[in-house]
Length: 181
View (cartoon, one colour):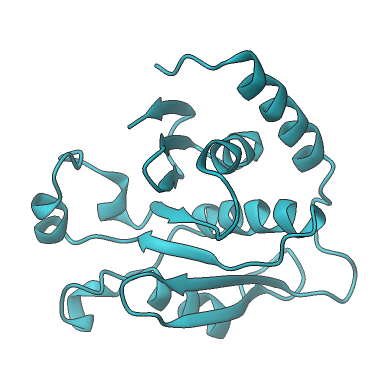
């Protein structure tokens, strides 16, 4: 369980208010695009995953899935379909930042992990949601980890939020929970 400071609570409340004011759908005529960069490979993609906010735009969604793959194994076993709820959560976080004047990619540290990759990571949960394509560890250039964690927590679609002060935030599509690593 995380003990939140008064400042963290105030920042979280402000993030919640701002995030909840986001439109349920993108403005008319705009795509739901997500900008990701892989920390380990340097690959970049800014792809639409929906054109109307109601259905998945498969070409863009599949490109985002490829960006969130396990890059430590052969693509035949490292590519999976990523939870659309996770993609929507990352998009909501990015939209909050854009509204705050920050246009920067989400730097992916880890998305999907095969069980083999997960087992090699010190401290990884044995049944991590990363192994099901439902979790992402990331940061955003120029945004502090505490602020990023509070923004992630404020997004209604977020399940778990892990705050790692040493350099990343974890979000997943599981049950609602918060922890500090």
